[in-house]
Length: 310
Image (cartoon, rainbow, N blue to C red):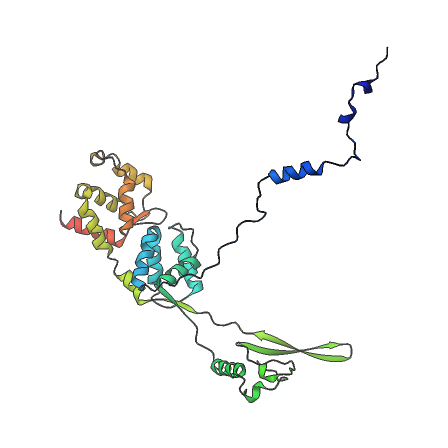
């Protein structure tokens, strides 16, 4: 007996594309789902930065404490600004320092940090001749007063513009601007064009403040190094060995200093390594890194004084 497969199929289970879906069930499922916002919470209202009214000496000290690894670089930048420096000159100087003192901060960021701390200040360039008169003319225009005779002519080829206007009281000068006249031939007709040419302003300069120079001059590396050695008399000979060893004209690598002192019995208990001493000498300004460890003038004076007492 032949059996038809359709006899085993329940018609209710067959999919009917024309049958309406049960919308009530769908709504129930949707209602059960937790409500989730489509957008995040509104951002807090932007607040203006609070101006720091503390004395510059306090702000500079806090800056050095927050960035001890960059302290000496910042001191060198301040000292470099004893004379007025342009931003370009400071960029070159700071990038030269960064060759031996790694930092993620750009020269511009260093300037901003030092300016906010009150260690350096920006000096605007001297105003060009006539700019003061132009500013006064603008003030009179905004106040509805009379303008100078040369400003009320809308067709003059000067800094006040060349286009005719209905309300001449709105004419104001443009600092550093001039009108350039050019002519060209189109067919049989000569056409004159006026172009507004802006003269670049002279850049300002940066100079160290009294508070900044005070911070530089108050840094006594020699006394600081002597104080360091006085606190650890047990390792005095180790410090002297490292300073003397780094007088080589090509400097010394970290591995060379390791070989010099790491096997010393003085470093066994507690266990010390050369990096412990090098980092402290660098912090006090007796050593510096220039693709190798070099003794500074402060370090040389320490060696000379030690030799004089032998």
